[in-house]
Length: 326
Ligand code: NDP
Image (cartoon, rainbow, N blue to C red; front, side, top):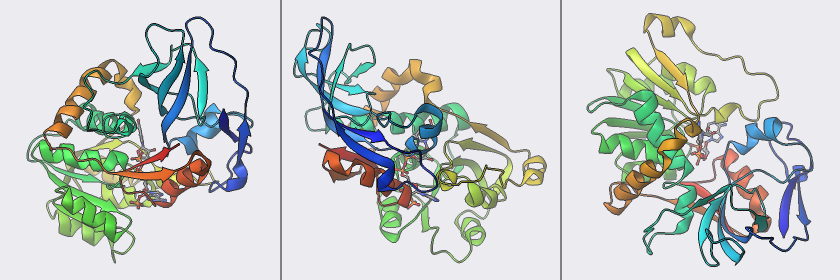
């Protein structure tokens, strides 16, 4: 098996020297075990903040993949079946099947299994729970989402449209803005080229925002909060603008605005609603089949390019879900 190791903890923006490619001999699968071969591997922003908390130097990089069972001593996962496996950046894995999530039954043949890492997987679930469980978004409301052309953000905007809302999205390139318009966003803008974020947010929704789905945090949020309506709700999903900071995070959030506008802000992890995952994945799949949900992927070829693909999302290179094919 080939594996990518965290050779040295990140200090600031990740570099190639933080990673090391290693080759490992695998044992024969024992009774109840399977041998998995990675088909699609996910690279996700959480790997950056989680690396410090969950990994030590020398560990295999954390991550999820869609894998094919190529040898099996388990009746639950016969040879040829696919599963979502949280086994990290590895081409092959021997495991006992306990952490494996079977691909949803009746997965349509014409839909790539890679979507189990994206719109019909963790990012899609994050979007759904942020909207329904955290924000409680209602028909006719106005929602703001940033990193809107990414894996989570693009699904957030589309679900909000399904729910009959007005959607404003920001992203970091003109190509991304064009993509958001294709998806039906009511207003989309390139936050890197606008003269004033405040003016752009005001122009997009002069009456303010009922809900804000925050993937970015930092300065963007301190401006966005000022544009909320009274009693507005904020789902704090991610703070990617701060993930590579080397100094502790202190804000800046405008607390007086929070008080005077009586805002409600809630951080969340999609795993809180794990018990709902099967039913939620079915709903996302239905929307996809009905054409109400579109999915775009940013594919990088080659296991050897995992670090580059990961660094790419932190630089904003991806439109849609970033996936690596082996
Ligand atoms: P994306 O597919 O959106 O990729 C990340 C995007 O973030 C980039 O393409 C880039 O887009 C933007 N970005 C990168 N660096 C910066 C920066 N310094 N400032 C502003 N934007 C930046 O990733 P995901 O959809 O997978 O994740 C989006 C967010 O959701 C992340 O913050 C992630 O940590 C969080 N998340 C949270 C979960 C939860 O359970 N709470 C679960 C999954 C994800 P652009 O060109 O627009 O800048």
